[in-house]
Length: 305
Ligand code: TXA
Ligand code: MG
Image: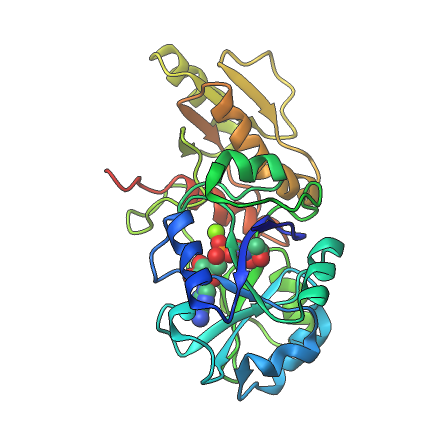
């Protein structure tokens, strides 16, 4: 079943039932190398799933749970290996959503859940998006409204004494650093052009091209003239003449609103028939680090290229 969370909707199954967990891989088409996250109802359940939890990880859990933070820790031996993609570690989080917490509390166990989308495509932030992504592949969708955060949780590898960020997300690097009292490593980033080594992920059907903010309009109009159906992510400060493109959305000025709307806006441009989306990266601080990460990944080379 699909369930809401504060970040994106998840496709969930009883974490202790390997057959149910393998359905998640089947329905979403994800490879075993991308195991889902175990969702638990509270920090008090952490030790049911993981062992050798360092003090830094407990500190983060106490501080940010329930919330958009996932901790990767050493799994307890009883946890089915199939559910972790054969890894000795497991990713765990406590979602900050009334409906998800009620479900977890009524169920009592852990719910392993991936984002409720086909592998590589946009994460759903409404129940309708889940239906559009997975159709009959999902038995039912628990509708908890639109997701408040809009981008996935921040994943932190926390097995050692020095945590590292594996995926930027809803909890900012700055907030993590404040709690830990030390700087954190983040995945390598690049300038605007996307390096070839990252295949696309979090991607709409339309191709995504990233340029400097002041070049968005010119790039979009040039591509439209060449015959593309261009969707434009206009920077919030733009005040010029109407843009000659197929579909134009203005990026929200507040970073929280941008994160909340990001996947919905990309989906909208797909629905409006765009085959190319021109956007720029926001300044990578706070929540915008996650937005930029998703846009870069969306612009990565497609599997068939
Ligand atoms: O906000 C979220 O995290 C959402 C909601 C539904 O909770 N979930 C989500 O799940 O984004 P998913 O499956 O789309 O992304 C989970 C990521 C995958 O990229 C997977 O590779 C990584 O977590 N992951 C899972 N277990 C891991 C582990 N043991 N070590 C490193 N990465 C892991
Ligand atoms: Mg996902």
